[in-house]
Length: 263
Length: 353
Image (cartoon, rainbow over all chains, first blue to last red; front, side):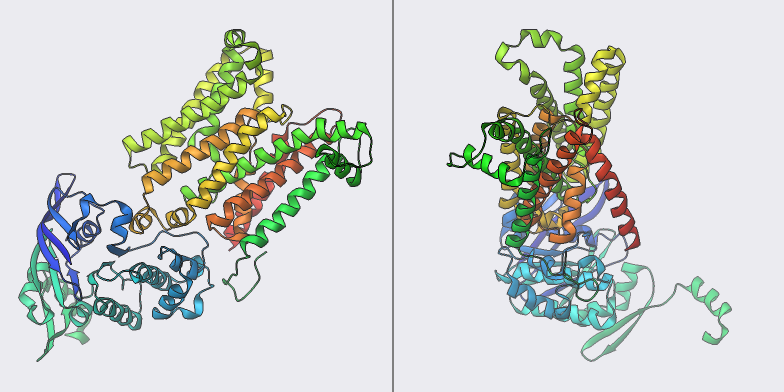
């Protein structure tokens, strides 16, 4: 269980996260969604225990993250960074084994298979494509969760470098992780992915939590409030399936002027 | 070298294989170094003399015993120990700052040692007179060692106070402290006499001429510490290569590990510089070359670098003391002559890759 209670994070006198409270249960996948600078990544790093809070409290499995040593925190949560800085010539398998305390090779093989890189275990990490590197890092993170159920998995834009096939695959993996008894929080830019793959969507704007609702409760009005643009929501009886942002009016007019075929 | 599979694939040699190959190479080079000098001895005579030194009943002359065991062995052992210290410290430091081209000088260790040594050579006559007779030969190395430790202590504590104690803070502050030490050294050289300048220059170029069993011990102990740290904290050091945040997420106490590495590196480099002056390129080139073979993992890289550094410095010193015999070239010149082209070759392959 991840609990954030009235969290405020400031930097340079600005409130990056402003009084956010939310709870994520084991078995649940929560998306953090919002415009650039909304505080999504800041909130995620605070959930990971990386940030000093100006106010409020964050707990993982009942433990206040501010009081835990790195080793204790590592047993409660795993984090996938937005971009990994690794330039050392480890093989994919060696990177994934770093996720396990015992350097377990079997688990590392299994997780590389889960991210469709079972064929690339001996490839050198720097020679992999950006999307492949991201999947290797994900396999490393999954390895960290292996040995202990009931943890938190925090993913910062795991789909950013991926093609559509792997985007769905990675979010399906996040779902499996939740089903195995973990609580999952994922920062996403793609609203359609958030609608299709998560249990609840936390909508952030300017550091504040505007809504935290299941995908079917998300409305175009809410999205407009958060992003400042209009959305077309494509829905079925089950709820919204896709959200497509419409260009702002002024931009739309200039677009139509230059492309009459679109008008 | 790594077995060629498909491009970008690699298979690592086992740790046992790496250590065996390098240990044999190092032993061969050490024996060759014992053979060469004013009198050239055959390998059999060297081995027999060594055996007699160990108390075995072997045929041979007393003259061989003196040449091998008394004259050459302390110097070869010192070269082995200093080479191992420089290269294992270099491997640790390159991992810590995640830069395969980082040099041990980066933390201000070398410049701190140099400043203290130069201060002693230029201003230290009084200190020498005040020191008890038995300690006098050790005043210069002790000054250099103290300078290395003080510089590192300043760098590490400033990095913790001003920054977050991370590797990037260490490098920035290390470069600053090194520059300050360099400036202070320059000032001292400005006021130095010609004779003092000459001894400073020789110290700066590095020499293993001061070999003796008494100075081997601290260097060997510092090297053993570096290898032990790498063995005990290998997986944490490997995780640090993922990035500070990633290492922390995996449970590594980054601040503590950074400080531990800095202290061990300072001890190893400090001891080496104190005994032999500045010997460049060993700490830079050896780990860099071995990484291509054994991989970046610290469990193998640090002990492999220790052996590689030991072999390379022993070979360089054998060249230094024979090539212009009966005179002796400063060994730092030989390591730079070998190291610089290797470095340029590495830069070339890196940019081609």
